[in-house]
Image (cartoon, rainbow, N blue to C red; front, side, top):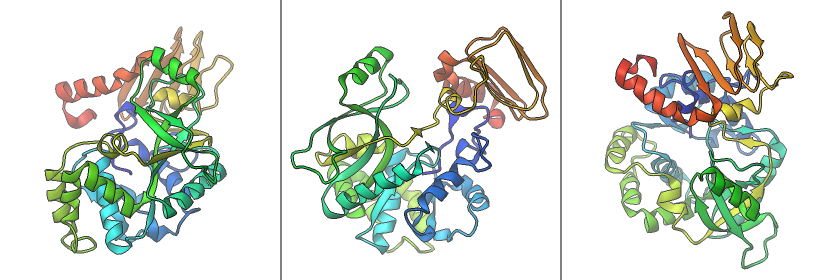
Length: 354
């Protein structure tokens, strides 16, 4: 899934060049390129489908050369994850109704790729032999308010992989006190947003729990992999509602399982989450930029162009980012307001700055 705007990473992430197409970690590869390389360990490139907004087709082709164009699925508008997943699932099923698929965001960080691959292979086995919907849950390390949570219980039947549990409940992003309580309970995991299932089972779930969505994409039979596909999808996206896969299916289904996992995961959803993965100086400042001078400043994340001289004095716990002639200075504790800032900028200054 590579169609989001990543507005919480503004001003680096912009509607014309969102964060999945950026090298935010300074590795020499963009997040999309890292994700693509990761999945080449699991399947051949012809089995990797990129679902993105129609505006980003050229960016995808620039960053992932040699793609078969039928594997780039173009969304005419942003309708959240359920339509995105339905589109890919129905298209894949039209060619291979027995396919097992992994659904993954294109902008996540995975530090331990060997463990990640092992977790997915375990889920493949279960999803390939049972009517189940699977997700990867991350063992939480702190009471984070930026993630959704999954509560698990022991399954009714002993699993071959003891890390696989039955899902009991999903919890949306909690406040701090609730997050502390969930962490202390010991039976909650972070929701990674990575799913594993057969196309047959997810289509069955769409039919049961989101019949309008299922009907919209089922009508495409005979049009996928044809010249009529984009026109059909444009109509399907007009007809379907904006809804996440969690609301559309996962919270309603009773055959959902989670694999407890630890593979150095972060959704890199905020500047603070990026802060944890950048080398910090003795004052806990994480700096990306060649000419940054800090005085009496600590716990800051600074990301500025290499040719820009920036001098900061007396800051504690701030985000300082400059990109394409936009400067953001914001307290880390208030970064959830960045989406509000972006909306205000759009209203008062137009699309030029977003």
